[in-house]
Amino acid sequence: MGTGIEFAFPVDEAPAIINLVIEHLQQSAELTPGYYVNGPIAVRFVRASKAFLAPNQAKFKGTEHDWWCYMEIVRLNSNNPEDDDKELEIYEHLQKILRWMGGRPHWGLNFQFPFDLEYLQSIYPDMDKWLEAKAFFDPNKTFESKAIQSWLS
Image (tube, rainbow, N blue to C red; front, side, top):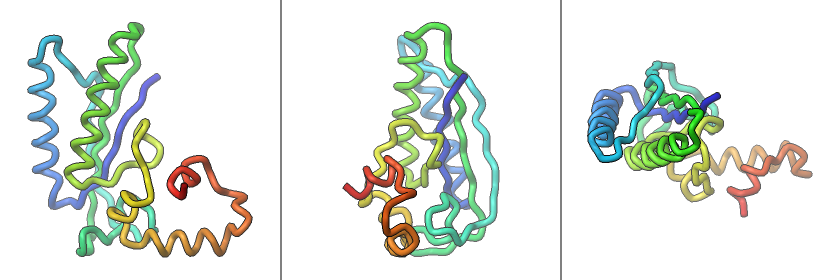
């Protein structure tokens, strides 16, 4: 089993972000005890989406982008719980870095990510349109998940 984190960035920002992550991982490995990523870093490129809450939604920071880069950092579970604790610590730290760099997190991969309405509105300019559509199509909150409830509370 394993977990992973994934963030989307406009494609023109990808080289600098990838270099920053690799540099940070190298520094983390040199610590005592060293912290390591035990899985691959995958990079894929996708066209922009018009979906309001897609990580590759075209609108970002006042600009429309045609192409997006998804960076996924995979983690395999260890048989040693102490290894998992160390690895989860570095992944939590990587999430903070990638968030700070302005990336949009993948909804299902990132663990214990602090999604809240203010943050979502800062990275999705059409978040309020999505909320209006949700209220219209799901007035009885039939399809409201715990995640959505946590944003709205």
